[in-house]
Length: 292
Ligand code: GUN
Image 1 (cartoon, rainbow, N blue to C red):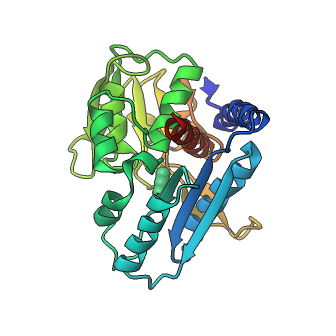
Image 2 (cartoon, helix red, strand yellow; image 1 turned 90 degrees about the vertical axis):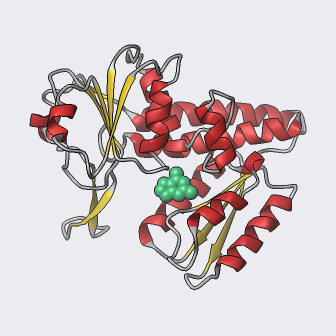
């Protein structure tokens, strides 16, 4: 069994990005600039966004964090997005999800200029991805592809079962694994909360990618020997013995599933760090495209 070390791979990717940024600086070029908008003060979202900003500094990007109060109206957020769309110094930006309930997420995603949509959630970019055109691939699925590639895990003709159909992870992942090329060429089954007999399906999977946010959902009995298990779950579970007051729990019963799997991602240190690295990669791409 091999543990897919997302922490290490993400550090490798960040080093590659930093080398590109150093070249830009040496040539007197503008470095990539990522902005992030966060609405409200959800603890987990704040942590994610702060990590994104910190990672920008690590690789030499400029970054801007826009914080808006939890009572922000949809119109105020749309105005801010328009401002970032028109700000020539910003190459890419994201609106951290989830948003407060008074704001319609779809309207917000539609408002982002597709050329700056480094999350890849705008319908234009989602469509481009589905049509095999070059685009910004959503960071978490992109990170999973990168892990599969860098560990040389075969995907052609394999049965990939995706659990969870969110547009942030499950839906794009199911499209990407079925595309031609590597990693891809899989036979994909997309499962969700209404799927019947899920164990019957997961036990046939060569590769399982789970993103449901239910700690320990995938049990060892649900997977076959030598399955590849990718765990996207990061639920905060209260834990008084931890200085933070919580621990992060994945969607997989790691202790038992790891005894059967051929490759498996840990939580933390698996998919999570990859997401940030690929957001940086998309931002570098956005800068390069705007330059050309
Ligand atoms: N919330 C959870 N994951 C993501 C992500 O990849 N991008 C944004 N914008 N919000 C998220």
